Length: 134
Image (tube, rainbow, N blue to C red; front, side):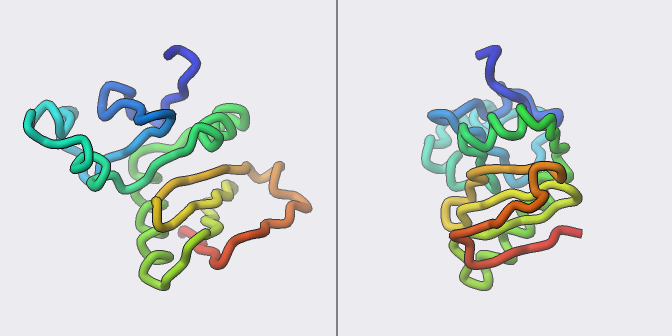
C-alpha cells in the first residue's frame, strides 16, 4: 500500500481504506480507532460515523497536486458539506483556500480536487451548489 496517499497526519491504520476510499471519523478519539475501542462495532456503523470520504480519483489528484489537508481543515470542509446537505445540495463545489473540491453530498465523498493553478480558466459543470469555506 505504499502507493496510497495519507492526507495530513492521518495514518491508514486509523480506520484504513475501504475499497479505495478513506474515511475520517467525526471526532478524534485520542489515536485509537473506533474498532479497537469497541470490538463489536459493525462495519456499517464505522461507515455511518464517517464525516468525509475521498474517492480513489480524488486521492490521486491530491497527491499529484501536492495538496495536504490537516485534520482541522478536514473538519472545516466536512462542516461545509453539512451546510450544503442542509440546503438540499447533491453535488457541490467546495472552495477552501486555493483548493476546489467537487463533493457528492449525499455520499459525503470528495470526487476530485484542484489546486489554484489547475482552477484557472476551468469551468465546473454538473454541480448544484458552491460553498466557500472561510
